[in-house]
Image (cartoon, rainbow, N blue to C red; front, side, top):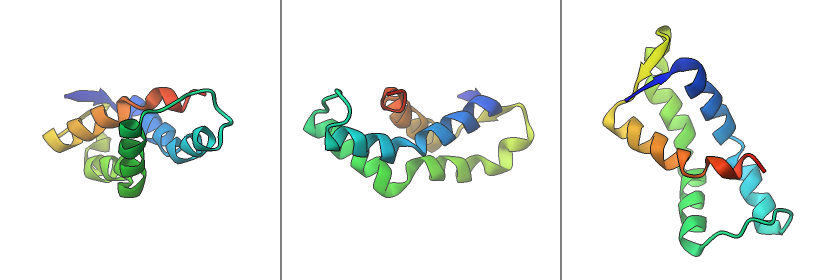
Length: 89
């Protein structure tokens, strides 16, 4: 899977805001309701800092306009992409 470098860096920056958005949801400031499974998955993403590991795994490839994600990077990207809507509150 290839992703444009600009889009990937913007996405990683956006996902760094996930913890803040999740705290807004938990405290009731946001109308979004999450299932227990989604809450557990988001907490897992936050605790493992998945977006940072995605960045560090591809740091060497940032010389090019497109970044080729490894199998592990692709699964991390797709897992994070699933919760991208929470950032745009």
